[in-house]
Length: 186
Image 1 (cartoon, rainbow, N blue to C red):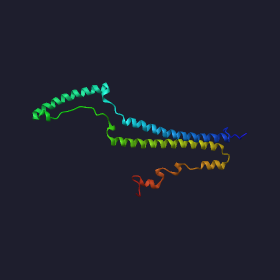
Image 2 (image 1 turned 60 degrees about the vertical axis):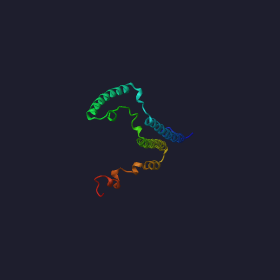
Image 3 (image 1 turned 90 degrees about the vertical axis):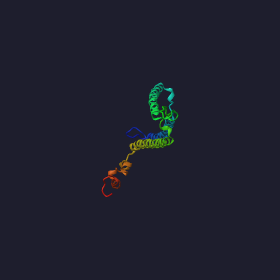
Image 4 (image 1 turned 90 degrees about the horizontal axis):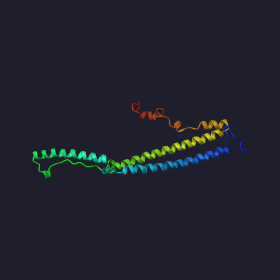
């Protein structure tokens, strides 16, 4: 029979759980990549969708109101054109119509929106992968820590540095502090 520690787990239990945690982390990272692709496809659908203006009664009613206002304004414009002696065939007039879309009409803007969406989704995926990996390592660390029997091994584990230990805040780094506005010695 295998020895059981205080948690009730055998070494084999901890090893099996650690293996499962690593496998789940791989699956979750793949899922994050898949989700990024789904979100990019959803973004593409939204950025390339045109909404037809002629199939909504509220929009049609507002267009009729605008056309009536434009007709009244054009009557005033025609009167002024006559006062100024402008022939009808050369006279200015007001027109009303629909613009068939928004920002998706300008190719350069769509390219910029795509670039921004891809960058944001890339950052989201990296953040998700980092969190997945962090959680995986935390669980694996707990599993290993619960099986450590010597004080030296526990002390060694407790002394492992973290990214926060290795990368202090801006205030803690004299070189970065020099870059701040109002810093002395710049």
